[in-house]
Image 1 (cartoon, rainbow, N blue to C red):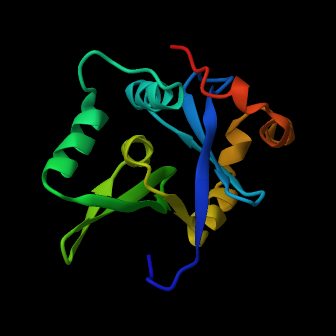
Image 2 (cartoon, one colour):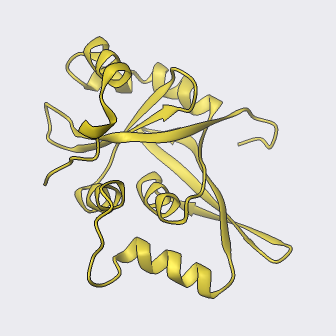
Length: 166
C-alpha cells in the first residue's frame, strides 16, 4: 500500500451470518458515505466483535482485551487499523502502533484488527484499492442478493445490529 493512497474511514455497521454458508460477516460502512465492505470472518473473532458491540463485560479478559491491556501497559497506542489488501479472496490488515516517537506496523487479520480497534477506540480505514479489488472479485455477490443487502445496510436500525448470536 502506497503512503499516498486514499483511505476511507469506516465504522462497524454490524455482524450477520452469510445466508448460504452460515459464516459470520462483519459489515464495515464508510463514515458519511455509501461504500460498504463485507468481510467474512471466523466464529471466535465474530464473537469478540459482538461482545464489544453489545457492551458485554466478560469476567476474565478475552484475547483482544488482553492485547489492549498489554499495549497499554507498554505505553503503546493503537493509532489506527487499515484493511490494506485483498489477495485470493483474503483480506489483509495492519495495525499502526505508536510508542514514544517510534511507529510500529503490525500485520494482522482484519477481524483481529477490528476487534482490537473497537476495544481501544482506534479508527478503522480501508484502502481505496481494496474496494476496487473487492468489487472486481464480486465478493458482495457471495451473498444471495446484493441489492437486498445494500438496502438493508442503508435502512437498518442501529438497535438491530450487534445482536449476533452463535
